[in-house]
Amino acid sequence: MSDTKHILLGPFTQLAPMSKLPLKGPLSDDQLGLIESAGVLISKGYIEAVGDYKDIKKSMGSTPHEEILLTGNFVGLPGFIDCHTHICFAGSRAKDYAARNSGKTYLEIAGAGGGIWDTVRQTRQASEQELTRLTTSRATEHLSRGTTTIEVKSGYGLDPENELKMLSAIAKANETSPVDLIATCLAAHTIPKDRSLTSEDYLNEILNELLPEVKSRSLASRVDIFIEEGAFKPAESIAYVQKAKEMGFEITIHADQFSVGGSRVAVECGARSADHLEASTDQEIELLAQSDVIPVALPGASLGLGCGFTPARSMLDAGGSLAIASDHNPGSAPMGDLVFQAAVLGTMQQLSQAEVLAGITYRAAAALGLTDRGVLEKGKLADLCIYNVADLNEVLYHQGSLKPALVLKKGKIEIDLRMEAHV
Image 1 (cartoon, rainbow, N blue to C red):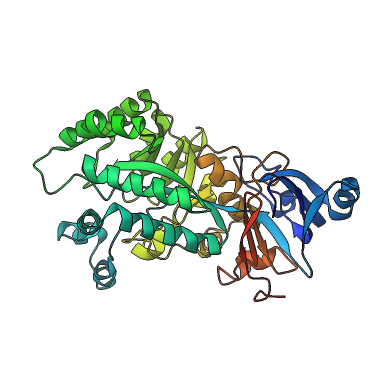
Image 2: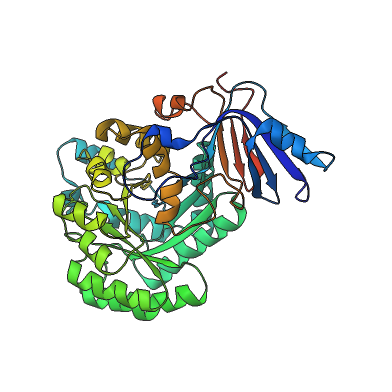
């Protein structure tokens, strides 16, 4: 397809533009504003118009344009946004999985040499080229499931040299992958075990040695920290993120996974999002609801660790927002299937279709501070996920087993399985 011509895509049996939804609070399915017999007009990777297919086609008149004709039943959504992943890593943690199923806890496994530190060892041994290849491969897998934007964290380097290697690998993967990869520096993932450093020593090393280099090389604009037993305490964490914020970084927080405290730091420092929140109580839920912080549920971690889910229903009912991400990582969430996880969370927390879909599109974009995607409307990126079915409800009903027939990134077809799709 030419980059200079208009592209008319349709007709869709149903199109869910996700464009008139509030950022916070509960959503009902009648708020989706589905458009039937819809068309999308695209130019230079952006959306020019959304509306009735015949009306758009008629308005084009003699204007040169190409058509992507959808013959049969198709439903369309914005490309999915996975706002929390760790897909830059090497190795496997299958032994951790077996140990958990045998009764060991996450923290016990970490104390015995498994957990994050096991992945650190394997990731340090991998070259930047290998990490780039692995990250690109995983991004391609996500793309095949309809995800067009992926946040990717470092955090398996735990020293300036290896953290920079990870972030460089993410940047190089972003250059060649059609998926947009949004890098986050999670050097404050845990305290390195191979050096005699206090948590204060390590956080100062990140602030003084690593983050200035990350900023000068434009490797990430976001900083994360894991606030938890065995990682970093709330008091030292807020001092760290406040300094990172002064350096010009946006902030996100690994919060309330096993114990509370992280969500309060997220609110106090004005973080973009607070992610995990499985341990959040009514107090933390109310605190988040009264703030601009986007809560991010990670159901893959709940499934992988066998623990409770983020209290998503309570967060929405309290007036908060809700994004949903896969947490794709080698330890607690190795599957990485965003739609499956979102569908399961919807079932376990009694979320409407609108709440789930907003959580992986519009509200997920907000968790990353992105205003150019997550909805289908004029001026936004032409990122679309399209299924060969007649009813939007089929998407979550199949809990991830239904794959997209078409995935477009910036108006370009990246996945086309129309001959293999459900009809």
